[in-house]
Length: 135
Image 1 (tube, rainbow, N blue to C red):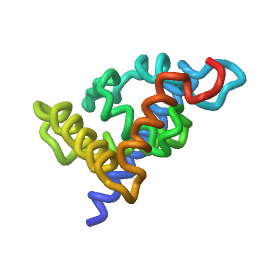
Image 2: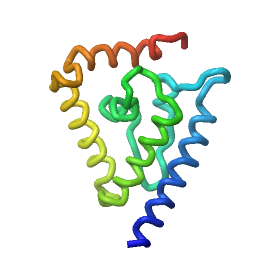
Image 3: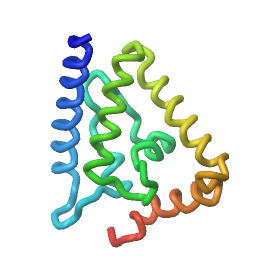
Image 4: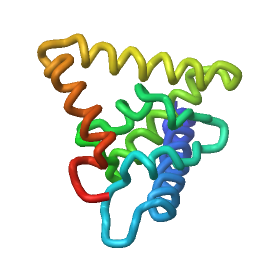
């Protein structure tokens, strides 16, 4: 009903505000993306704790798999976290999200249609080399 959609909008607004604040806090001047060292410093939205050292979490966060995080990617991920915080119980949220991210990464790495292991290896290399750009 209408209550559910307005509740979702509140979560989305919170996710957007939080993402923007975190992006501004961590993004170096003159850049429009975050690299691994900055990704690992991202603070979770209250009530939706995430382990930013969890590789599958970073894989889902970096949705275009270029080794860098844009503001749009961060907002999309925060919205996903916020929506799943409503679906999963608070006591199991982090474990459930890690499971979800692990399955998404596994599915992509094991699927020829998404480039399989070669595409995953390329992302992994980009992630640890600062997105292929200068750090």
